[in-house]
Image 1 (cartoon, rainbow, N blue to C red):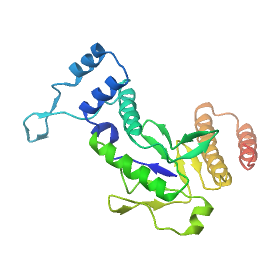
Image 2: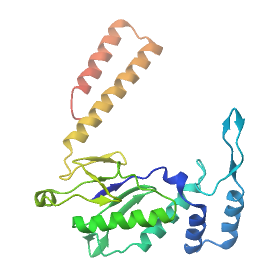
Image 3: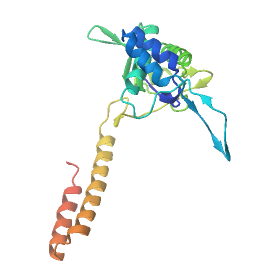
Length: 229
């Protein structure tokens, strides 16, 4: 599978692509026109001692706008509709080749050749809408069977994508064998740090008697030393 990263995806997507995608998703024309009014005519200036000339803004969705993720997702959905769906993995008779959460994308395939085609197709279609895949941060993960075959790596735009043994996707550490030990260790460590900070803040504001402080610290340390948090 491939974990796809982009270079400033929300800032680079073309306005034209957004409005076309919304139309294909059967959004009423009147609502599309309202969005066009809010985006058309937008300009920016750069200050370097003096202001530059006005630069027309023709790409990017607005940060903080609740509609921005929806508009971005609509464009991404159209991109995936254009791609061939033969590649992927079979789940209960259904062919699946991607998981998406906004611009956090995973591509699936049973063969490296199919995964390479998916990545290159995605790269080609995204560029048409102004997006750019970050090849240095896009990673490949294979199972043990694929690793033993020792086939050549996957190349996109002349760059070979790095193969990794683990990847943090949406806060979840993924590995080829779905091992949990390292993730548990990381979560236990994070919990220990958080408990230490909470205890320090509590003692700094409440100031219980010294004997009580010692008992509290001993109790917390005993709990934190256990892996069963």
